[in-house]
Amino acid sequence: MQKDPDSRLLEQLSRSRIYQDYEQAFGDATKLPLSLRPLKVWEMAHRKKRYENPFCAMLAESREACAACLQVQKEITQGNGETKTVTCFAGLCDTAVPVTLGSKIIGYLQTGQVALTPPSKPQFQRITRQLIEWGSKVNLNQLEEAYYQSRVLDRKQYEAMIRLLEIFAMHLSTVSNQIATQEQLSEPPIIRKAKDYIEQHKSDDITLTQVAEALNVSTFYFCKLFKKATGLTFSEYLARVRVEKAKNLLLNPNLRISEIAYEVGFQSLTHFNRVFRRLAGRSPTEYRKSLPK
Image (cartoon, rainbow, N blue to C red; front, side, top):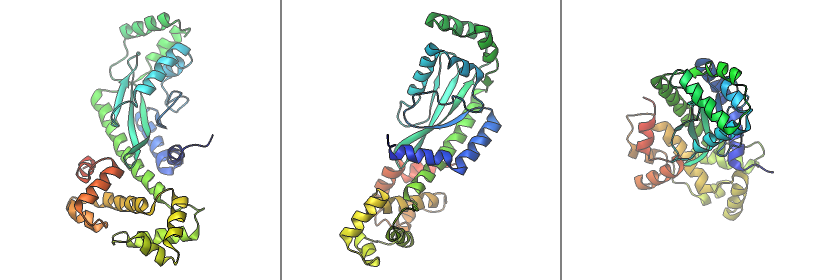
């Protein structure tokens, strides 16, 4: 079955050097697993991952406990598109941070299998009772040994670590937008020329007709070819290019949002705010406030 565009984009992100380097550094620093997972997942996000909690790995071998863990995977993505933390029946936390393409969530950065309080005998006894009630056949002696190996962080440490993930998720979201507008090797030369022209004139009040004339083709032909090659209309593509430039300019606290709007080619602040919110999922002001200080 052919994968949808969002799934293919997520695979590109997961294979990117920036993600692989971050996953390596994150694991080395925290000793926790990190996954870039799609919206829907039918298996544990951290299964067979580096730094997978041995306790969770054992539970994954039990059908009954596995079902409970999968329920956590489902719950963690149900919400209003913000970072969410869920605690499983064993008292371990998992957190998912959304990665977006514009305002659309395409996947999640997920970590966890971590305890926010030290493992205890009473807690393990509760886990044992639950497993026995489910009829699970897990070796309890081995499970207890693995349970006490669980990574423990205090809440402040964990929240700081999640904040780092949120910053990285913002970076991945920017990369996903760049990928969506990047030249593809299979693109016809006319599309590459069109993108070059758009890049050079993105701050101007350019139109579809002007680009077509610059390429010496009819507007109808160019419109049809551009949509087929990029999956976006000319207007959609131009908006993405302008919003990406605006995101970079928003890093400068000395620039007013109205200045940025006109700088990137929008003819009105209202139009800029509307398009930015549609593609970035938040207003320019909200986006600027979310940037790391």
